[in-house]
Length: 116
Length: 111
Image 1 (cartoon, one colour):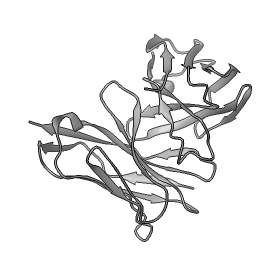
Image 2 (image 1 turned 90 degrees about the vertical axis):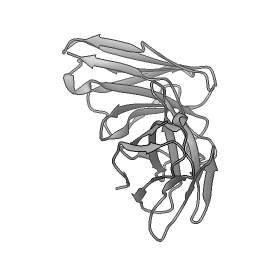
Image 3 (image 1 turned 180 degrees about the vertical axis):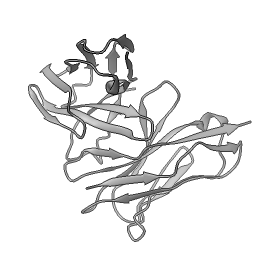
Image 4 (image 1 turned 180 degrees about the horizontal axis):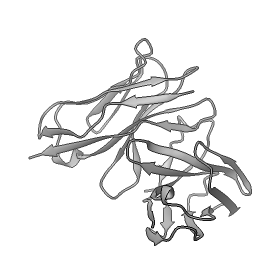
C-alpha cells in the first residue's frame, strides 16, 4: 500500500470554526490532491499541488485553501466551516500528472468531517 | 466539459451472479478511462484502466472495454463474490491529467 495517512480521521466541528486537515505521504510523489466525496457526486477535486508551494484550484475550491511547504505534507484548510462542507475528504498522490495513465493516483483512507 | 455517467445503485446480486455496471462518458479528445473500487471504510483503489479505443482493462476477474463509438466503459465480472461488495467508480482523465469521477455505484453481493 502507498504510504498515505490523513489526520484526523474523524472530526466534528461547529459552523464558523477553522478546520485543517492533513495529508502526509512517504512516497516522495510530486503531485498531491484533495477531493471531497458526497452522495450522488462521486469524488470532486478541491485543490491539487504539483510541487512544494505550487498549488492550483480544482472543481469545488470555494471556501477551501491549501498549503504545501514540504513534499510530504499537503494541508487543506476550511477558514470558516459551513454545514455544506460536511463530507468525506480524501487525499491522493501521484508521481506524474501528465502521465497519469501510467502513474495511477493512490488514495488515503479519508477524513470524515461533520460541521454542525 | 467532461462528464461521466454511471448507473445508479445499489445493485444487489447473489454470489456467483454476473455483474455489469454501465458507464458512459462525454469528453473532448481521447481520455483514458478507469474503474476505481472503494471497500467499506477505505479509500479508493484503482481496479483497471484503458488508455485508448478498443483497449480492454482487466483485474481480479473484472473487465471493461473502451468503446469510443458508444463512449462507454462498462464494467463486468462473470461470477461475483461477497468480497466484491463495494462502491465502484468510473472515471476519466482530462487533457491535464486530472481525474473526473462518476457518482459511484454501490454493489451488494449476498451469500
